[in-house]
Length: 192
Image (cartoon, rainbow, N blue to C red; front, side, top):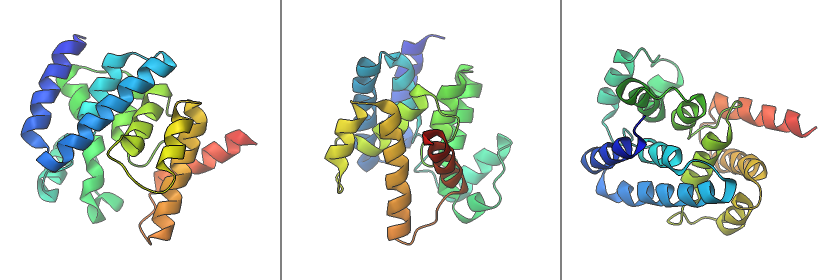
């Protein structure tokens, strides 16, 4: 896998597919991922690919996103029918798998489920979730505390980010993704 070639292509696709106001976020996720890579001795190219791909399809119209997902064999029923935007990570992961022959499970799971979390995440996927929630254009209560934790312990930070996502959803009367609940239950079970 020629990672630098993939990064170059993904950067061009981000410029083409992502709305200008979201590009700053994507670049922030890349920057935060690279800092986490240094801190946890992870391969920076892998995290850069994940960061560039995670919101690649986020700004597509719902019908186009559902059509691409369907062509990839991704089920678009249930929560995805109600909230097609949630397909963007799944589509991006499948795109990486098909276009660049990426087979790394942690990379693909991370991109696919960066919004919800997943009980089987490894260090790369956890780093992406942290970067997506904590990159330096994000401002919300406790963000600075969570950033500190992110550079202290990857697993503790992941636990706290999932907790924060749940708290935010409940506090704002938002839909709570079933996979986030499953992830939370696995994380709590692992702490006992």
